[in-house]
Length: 632
View 1 (cartoon, rainbow, N blue to C red):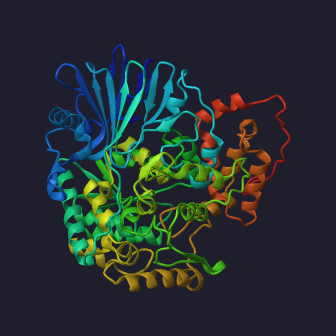
View 2: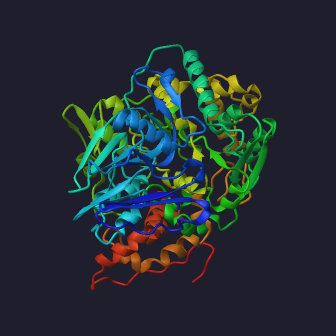
View 3: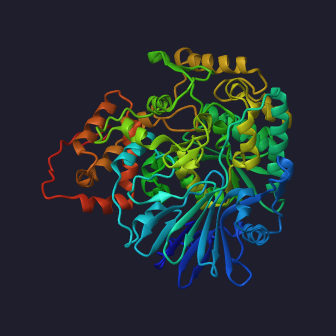
């Protein structure tokens, strides 16, 4: 697997599958530190790269370039030369700037610098912490890894479940900030240089960047100009004529922008269970842009098989189902060398992480208004987190969610601390904590599974585009659409193709688009009666998991096979799970609780910790039920 494991004071564990899939593996051990790194050959040459006789540099991931802060703006950005790999590039930056080079680093990467003479190992995380590093202190050092399971399984690391943070995960599908559900294991800070003293294992952390939301008042068209120009530049710097490019293509606009910027010669992949409305839209976009369309059809057991297939990508962030493309690895890697997606366009340039009012009209549906809900204090921020929780906590967990949040979100020395990550103001907290660090979003499984397949990039996470987002007024994100406008500039043909959700092209005003989206959804649901071939299928890209649980017995079989494991755990009873499941069968929507719990139960660490919690007075009395579509 792609990844990084290291240890100060002990030998590192073996990396599973380190030679599989053509991954390039680097191993380094001296008297003080051991490092093992596996990456794609396209993303790294020989590692480490030496700077002089005593300094060694490693890079996991990809460095896009370097921001010269003395120049400022996108004009101060120097792209990494195409003939220089990321590790050699960072070694050169270190030779010129020392560790201060971190403040100008642009990329999706982790950089390690081992200075033998100083007796230190410095770990540099990129601005958003896109590749989280988990670590734990040991008696004589520090263990760290891109995989929390590797840290937890180290014999010198003692851990157990932190029930408060585990509660957060079961409700939100992730924990916040640098916290994890395992005691003594945390993430390294994003946008920071964490320097470990190899003699005593002490760590000094220096932050080099914080997201600061500073809206700039300018006409929307000026933002469209800058965004389009910058996006083109990001893609042009990355594109190489000798590589085959693939795009994960939906029927919407975000991934469509990738095709508009790349042009022809691209393979467009679309995943679905049938040739749905969205699949047909994606096919039209691909063909009209002059690109190949590949339909990746999920088989009936795709979700069930994901339980085993995606075990390695969890890290207590997201569901086992969210390694969406992992079942199509052979089809994808046989056709392309690198892959793009439109992830995080909604987060950075639309209203995904902005508090907005939403109203339920029962069976008719929900209506979200494109206006901002004011958050003027930390208690209101916590209220918003509680109200926006996708779960109603139907598993009857032993901790109180509000108390956990209140203990972890507070003012300190003029800054706001949110699960040990600092923000300069309330606005910074509200508008940026949804992606700083990136593990505050719940898609790490998706990213990890793709990055293990082949070099993968989300263009929207480039520093230059993040900076534009931090200057864009909220009203433009809620009531305009810079993505649609950029597609119109780059390829009007693609902009004219109706969005799969709205039934309208991308070249309409926001008002028309918003009303079209709302009324089209109502029309399709209540008048046209569009019905997929099976209840758990949809006209979008994803399965209707609520219906899948009701109509397929895979979920209950998985739970039943883990009944003893559940009874050994301190945070849930099997009877509570049975009741939650039965309520779901009876019409409640408990997908979040059910899927998140099952994700936890598939993790090897859970089984190991369960043995520690097991007691002789555990009851084996539980009520069997007949799952849907099956019999006992």
